[in-house]
Image 1 (spheres, rainbow, N blue to C red):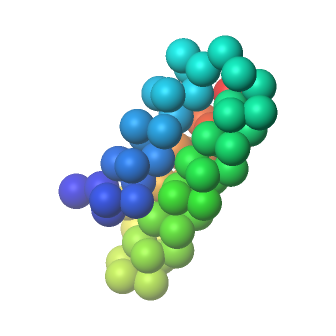
Image 2 (cartoon, rainbow, N blue to C red; image 1 turned 120 degrees about the vertical axis):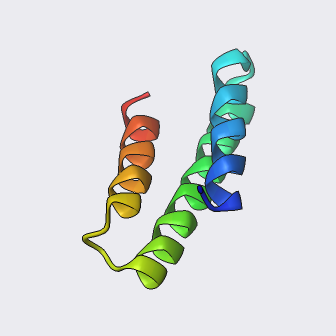
Length: 67
């Protein structure tokens, strides 16, 4: 199960796709990045870096950076 931070970040990422105001879009990207990073750190602390859940969190962060 994904941490709440990661689920919140997914919602923020979906908002970015529909946002037309560039300043708001930048703020949403920063918020999503913070949430994804926090989720990754929590998962790393809980399961260890080499766990599949950490790879999932890294993938979500990478998708955000790619967009």
